Length: 231
View (tube, one colour):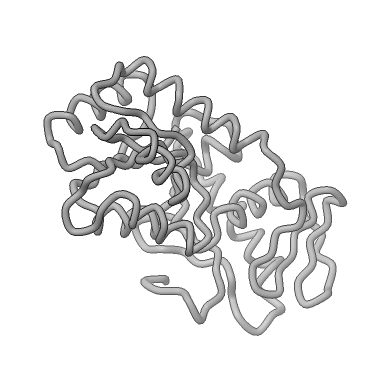
């Protein structure tokens, strides 16, 4: 699981990063709300841990902003405030769960896993859209500007994953783990080949490209008008 931790208490953050990493998770840490918002906006995560009280931008404001932008990554709020009204406020702001301090790492990990399972198995739209590109999960059909596009099973899964993370940078490691089910880098060009094939099918015969390479980071699917720092 790829986790974003937004926590200004360095001691608490170090403890969480160490514990979650030892459990096999990849953790990125932001020490304030603005940095947390930047990371959440530009990268894809399986879940987020957000402290309630943060410098520069408080945790609830961060969550409200990513929800406004359409980012539905599961969020676990951490807070020393255990009043019922505070928990309700946190959930209404867009948090998915609320854990009060002090806490046990085992409980935090279990809650994260539950949130991720809920997000993966929950009801979601069966038709994904990015610009004029459409992917129908039920009929297993892809079209762009009304034109049917034939994809191989792996290409379809790759496009589905990219569309589920529209506007976010998707790293090679994320693709290997979630599209190929590899938990290691096989040191092959399999991703480059599949990205090239997919790009030729969804972009080549159309006016504006949707699939972009982000130098040194990974790939991003979005309309060109909104694309930044792309090759």
